Image 1 (cartoon, helix red, strand yellow):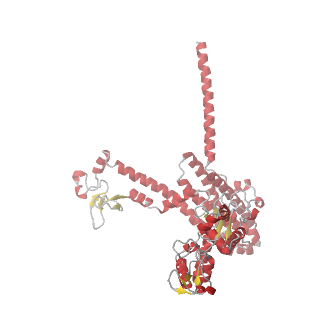
Image 2: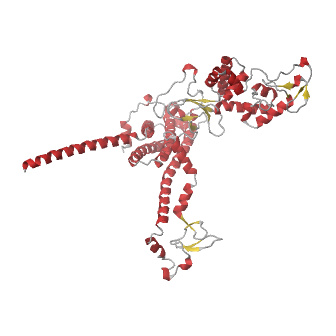
Image 3: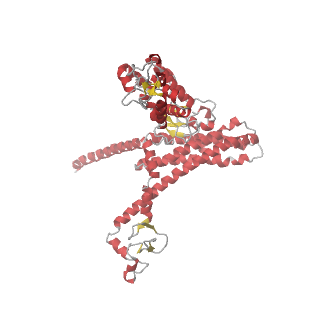
Length: 553
């Protein structure tokens, strides 16, 4: 590997021409045709939550609650205007068709009557309720009490129910969960939908809050291109432009996750590999592997026992208390001078020669190897996660304390010390990538690809360690300096160079993994083709020699 100075000298230091993204890629623009502009809408958000600015192309927009309400209101207004129906009816339609405006339009114009019946927007009442001027009383369909017409309410179907029963019916359904959004008339088998106007009129303040919470959540949860940020306590949603590159997104709360599987951001590793890895980390299979590799079952009670002393005389825990030999698993009472002595059992050796223990030993050895291999990858996966979390803390400390202190000591404007922040952001992102490459490596079976992968991973990891050491340890010298020095300017140049070099290493690693390490396949095919041609050439030469031999004879 090249030395640190060689790498710095060889690298282009014109950082002004570098992209703001970690990994290169074209940024798609979704601002045409009324589509949302997929970028962060908050200009005044502190860059501590803008790690996403160092990600691949921005193909999503983060929505706050007020943004969601605005989009929801716009969709309702659009459907209401195009179909010439009330906003209450438009809301019912959109809820039924999962907030897809285009789907509502298609279905409505294809068969309006069918849609009305299916959704419950009736164009004529089933029962005509007399007006107060007509006199008389009406019987509530729930409590069967008689009420004057002004105390009776109904939806489009006209089925009469008193205000008290309506209030109880609505309150019960709201407290029953989001199903209240698709509420129908209390009359059995009546398809008429209960709109927002009834909830607004009859629900209590507490119930209204619940209802509108369900209403706004349905806009995100029923929308195929929107998802809530999975971070605890976060109420932001992500509007994602599918099919436009990476699934990794970052919320304004600073949480980064994969939009496709909602696990933490894991580019360049695919979602299936991540799911396998997470299942393996949480599964009992690794516990079983450890038990198989490091214990044996008691011959009497079958409980697994770990050998924690030197001699072979084992005693099972109470209430079993069975005494046996660790080597042959037979009763300890059978061991004496006749069988080789208490501490030199030859029964096991004889049995092993007969093949009695081969299968058990093989199974135990396989479990041990599997456990050691998993431990190797898991320890490095977890270590990089820990280092990433520590780097995030160090980044905040640098912003809140160190940069200001360095500016005072060395007389350098804080705007010229952004290289420190950029270095920490690079480290945070690279630790995330490096962490998931260990999950990728665990499931990589191909030997040739594995060698190439480990080479790329090693180069990237080595570069990252140099950068991390520089910003974490070498910076400390300048925090206790007595005044400005040329060494600090040299340090800034070195840090900028290491940041850029590390970025390049990880770009290469990410691209290689996303391409499935295709370079190995192409090199293998090229090598195979070259060997074939060489073989044909050599074979042809031998043929000419053999044909000339008889002539000489």
